[in-house]
Amino acid sequence: MTALLRILAWALAVALVSLPVVAVLEGWIGADRWPLRTLRVHGQFQRVDEAQLRRTVLPYARGGFFAVDLERAQGAVAGLPWVEHAEVRKRWPDVLEVRVVEHRPFARWGDDRLLSEHGRLFPAAGVDVPSGLPRLAGPEARVADVVALYNESRALFAGSGIDVRAATLDPRGSWSLVLEGGARVLVGRHDARPRLARFARMLPQLLAQQRQPMARADLRYTNGFALSWGEPAPAAAPGPAPQSQEESA
Image (cartoon, rainbow, N blue to C red; front, side, top):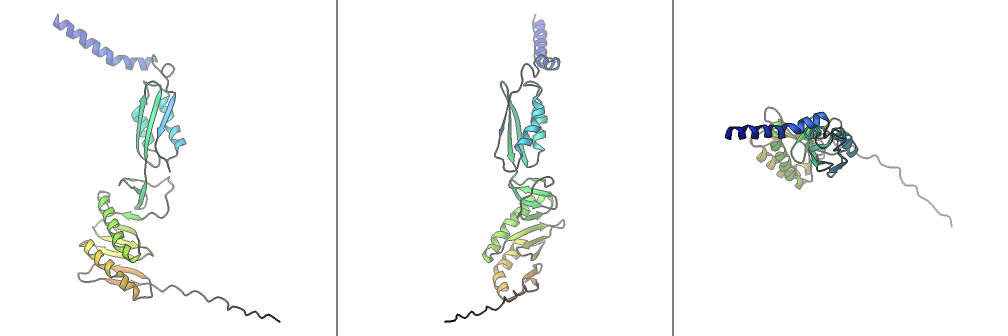
């Protein structure tokens, strides 16, 4: 009797698992009987095209509540421009719910990608890239290191009123910066932070002694650095001399 009960329990379990699959395939619980009538989209959008998002997810809802492929729908939404994270769920009895987190760009990364504020890289192709973003570059595994040095450099040069516009870590492990105005700073592979701190501390005095703009600074020396200066900005052409006006009495 015990063996018979086990067989019956096993057969019942198989039936419970397979019945919904068979029902979907046969159309017993298809879209006409259990349709998804409501699409709810959650998220704060500045760059994600909500209309495009809806067009992307709606085809997956046509199979009805039980047949909707949530994984494929979620993957399709996650592949849209500016989408950093997506979740697609269904709510009984007729709701398909989409939650989207949008990329918030922090910097350009290399030639063809952007870096989000959460430290994730995503393609720049097909998106309207905001102007004024700093340019960062380096090995993908060193994203956090590049961001850290960039932020520290900005704090160091803030006292001189100079912004850092780019930070690069090349494949050999050598650092370089580009300052506001276009001056390039070669930092090197060793002691990057002490060298930058020393240079930033002396920079206001160095700039005060020169009329020319700084073009290049090489910090790859043990006890100093080498500077190159550009051409001074052309003086503004004098305007026409003011004409005297005489009034007759």
